[in-house]
Length: 89
Image (tube, rainbow, N blue to C red; front, side, top):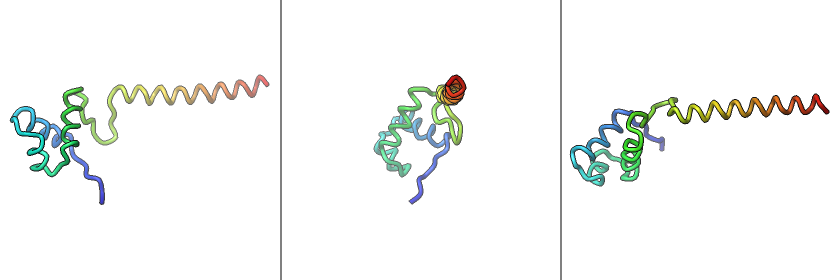
């Protein structure tokens, strides 16, 4: 069975269905053929950071981009350090 993928618009509409229209999470999840926990997570993600919620395929939140950049930089610095250690020995 393949994992289903949902668009950002679908997730936003599903969360709005519960928040703005007052539909119960259980009822909305049944109507949309989702597990309740999935819908609850979408709502939690949306309330935590509405602007950057559900970034999409291959896109990352700004914090994640910074972490990736720093990891690459650390790897580069470790390689340079190792080269200098070998040269000094």
